[in-house]
Amino acid sequence: MKTTDIFKKKRVFSFEVFPPKRTMPIESIYNTLDELSALKPDFISVTYGAGGSQSSYTIEIASKIKKDYGIESVAHLPCLYLSEDEAKNIIEKLSREGIENILALRGDRVPDTEPEKRFGYANELISFIRGENDNMNILAACYPEGHTESANKIDDLRNLKRKVDSGASHLVSQLFFDNGYFYDFLEKARIAGIETPIEAGIMPVINKKQIERMASLCGASLPVKFLKMMDRYGDSPEAMRDAGIAYAVDQIVDLAANRVDGIHLYTMNNPYIAKRISEAVRSIIEH
Image 1 (cartoon, rainbow, N blue to C red):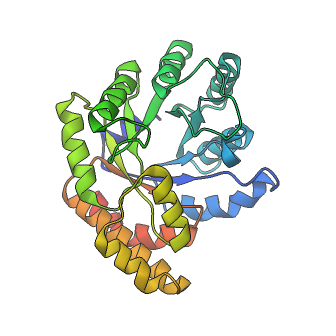
Image 2 (image 1 turned 120 degrees about the horizontal axis):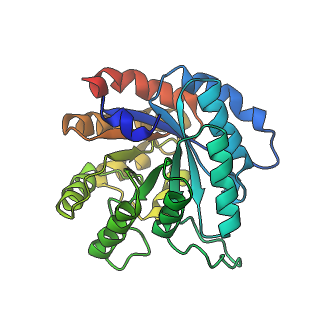
Image 3 (image 1 turned 120 degrees about the vertical axis):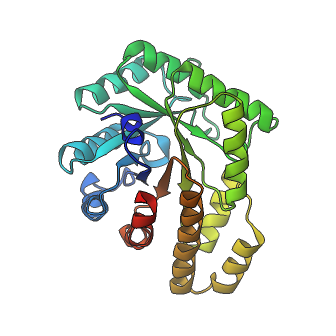
């Protein structure tokens, strides 16, 4: 099933997982999938391998999610370091496995590594996928506070519109910790003529250093109450975990009350966190 069909029926609640490191066996993620699948998300997206270096785990995990767990899956596909032949082969493999959804991304730059020259931006990959397999449902990323490399938010919205005009039919947002930024972005996106479903990406805070690094990389602002929470509980792993869960639940309740299209939970492969949040918000999201 295409993710866009799910939005026609309900508000969507989905998860993201990442493959194990290349030095680890793929089976190391199976217990995580067992527990996450029991929470019955609407779909699970799978990032593009450890460090964005290869896709074999991504395809295998996405296939297992769909075939063995009966849950729709989405395979991430960053394009900056892909040749046209590589992209074509991956799209063909995904199609053979019955995977109907691709999250098309530019991807992060790798230091001291020269990108391929075929795809410089996600919209170019989206157009290519649409040309190779018109039946494939294409997702794209959006950035409530603007992409870190965009000149400004207006320029970022123009780039997002290019993705949608190229064939993206569902958008998933980068993480954010202040819902006000998401609402402002959503209003401007609709004014710009972007009518596709837009899921709000939520990442629970369970580790102070980790979240500071993530926020720095993606340019997410840290609200005062968020900083106070980290300062108060950051040195206590258990307290930080519970405070992070509470903060994420508070964000989701507010987003659901404002009738967002869906919630995409960055699980960090932590079923305990996903379970606690799912139990707290499931009835709210489904209301």
